[in-house]
Length: 246
Image 1 (cartoon, rainbow, N blue to C red):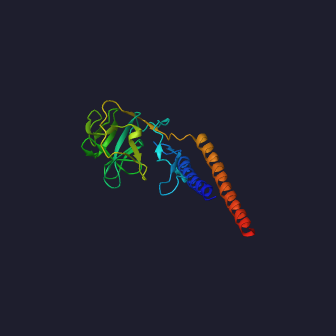
Image 2 (tube, rainbow, N blue to C red):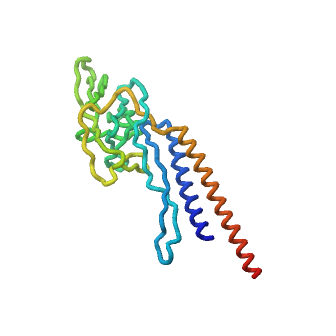
Image 3 (cartoon, rainbow, N blue to C red):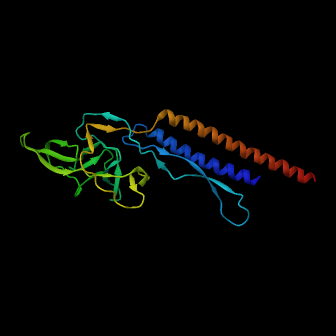
């Protein structure tokens, strides 16, 4: 009986974690550049003395769907979508390099180019600072140009180039802050050429209908595992009653 209890218990635990991941996907359906989490369970034989009769159901590593999301036209000069397989380089809260496809950029009160969440966008030589200006333009190759304050529109000055790297989704892991990092700790190569599309944003790649179906399936699976737990408990009680009668 304990075998059935153990398998059902670990399965129910993994299902709850999978439900949490799907719920997080649904919560981020409108988040720019969000990549849906992929959930999958696998059997794991518990090691130890005795017969190999204990199997754990575990949740596989939290991967993500790297496919591009839909493009949303905004007309904002600093809104950018990154070519598939490429990532914007930002500085995380710990001052380390991280990667994102959330291309809603803006200039903060300190004149720094940042994401909508306030993360500094990295250029070829470090964070990008933008002097006082009349207008800002961002080219497809990441070059950021301005018309300096007090100058004529024909006067343009380059202030930096947004750093974009090329990395396969399978080589990246997502942190608790939602940013991507190389799984092996290496630095991906810088991308060259026109890798940005301006005036558009990449939406979340979460499929709402599919996620709702997954949530329903996981709910039914959890109910089935709980019923197995109850059945195993009832069988154990019945067996104990027979032993007392004996």
